[in-house]
Image 1 (tube, one colour):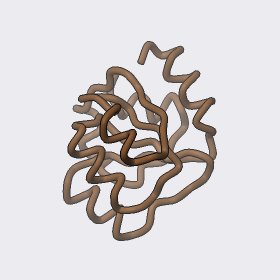
Image 2 (cartoon, one colour; image 1 turned 135 degrees about the vertical axis):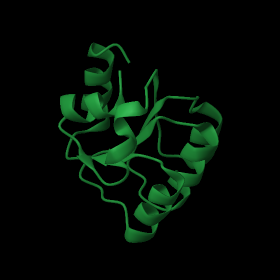
Image 3 (cartoon, rainbow, N blue to C red; image 1 turned 90 degrees about the vertical axis):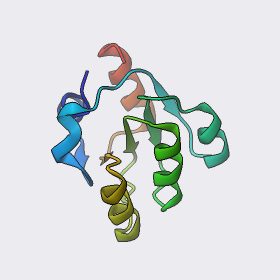
Image 4 (tube, rainbow, N blue to C red; image 1 turned 90 degrees about the horizontal axis):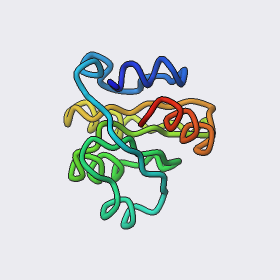
Length: 111
């Protein structure tokens, strides 16, 4: 399933890179807010669910080759994070959805 389809199904807002979301496939998911854990657990093409919004999420997701980052619970990335994610073509999505709700919906979609 593409990140574009995931965003639509979960009713998420694009903070970055909506224009490339149709060509990014997602397989698997990791939920976690501790960056050092995420760095070792997020796998290639995973959806990473977190409440973290700082610049370091872009570095972790890029190094892990994540399909996208979903920021939950209404948390919003700052301009510096958005700018860096756009530069790295890392998709950041977000919304009021909880991490649990996002994970359940992703599981229902076969992610």
